[in-house]
Length: 72
Image (cartoon, rainbow, N blue to C red; front, side):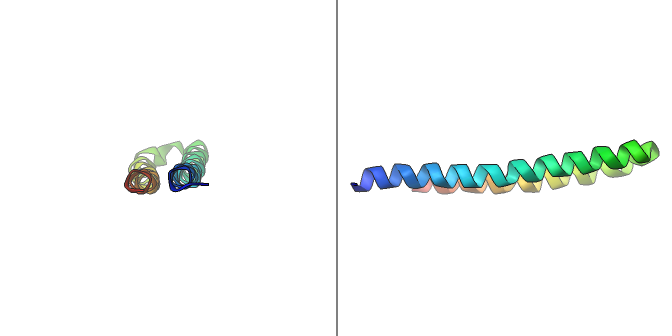
């Protein structure tokens, strides 16, 4: 394999691994937040902002992998 092929393969692996983990994390955050709101609907206001912050931090990991893939 030549260097260009290896670079393309490395980019694909970075985006694949770097995208699946945040996707799982965001799904778990949303799932647990909806479970908590379902059990205690009055807590929806207190749970919404931390839920969004957690999702944003998890999404930042995916953006970091995108930046790494662009720099390769």
